[in-house]
Length: 103
Image (cartoon, rainbow, N blue to C red; front, side):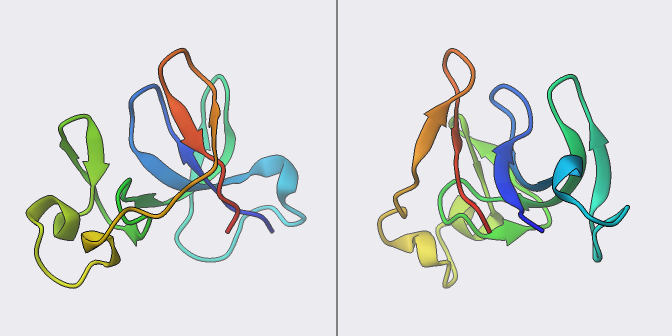
């Protein structure tokens, strides 16, 4: 089972996502919710911080970026307090890019 990190809509937050076509069974184990749109069909998991790329229960929009609480406040021991990790990017929409990260 392959999971990806995808931008859920134009300028929207990142989430872990499993495409329905990648599944052998009907539903992945764990906390995945059914997600269907015009371009995506599958299961959405945790939100993902754009700075540290860690999964989180929620993200905050800060200056056009979706950040976890730790990165938003600049406190704690988030691994993003150094430079953000490099991510291979591919363009999907005119001004959006989606990290191509396989988990």
